Image 1 (tube, helix red, strand yellow):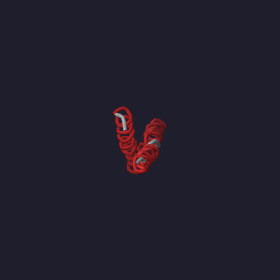
Image 2 (image 1 turned 135 degrees about the vertical axis):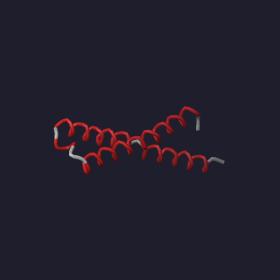
Image 3 (image 1 turned 90 degrees about the horizontal axis):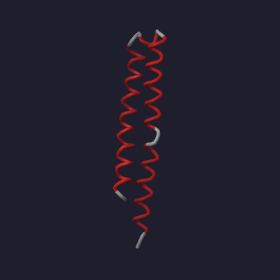
Image 4 (image 1 turned 90 degrees about the vertical axis):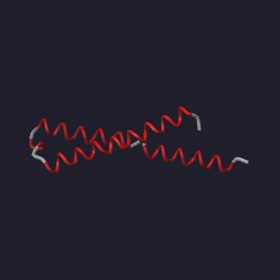
Length: 77
């Protein structure tokens, strides 16, 4: 793989973990605080959860691309 593809995949993996952290923070704020009882708190919590899910979504695509490249390298003579 070229360096540009590897760096892009590493960036997407990092964003996946950042999204997981944001999702976790939103869930903790929702479950363990009274912040969700105010409109501004609802906005913060829903933004954290939503952005966390959006950042996590490209990771399965990265895993598929890596798997496909390994399969392609195996079949080449």
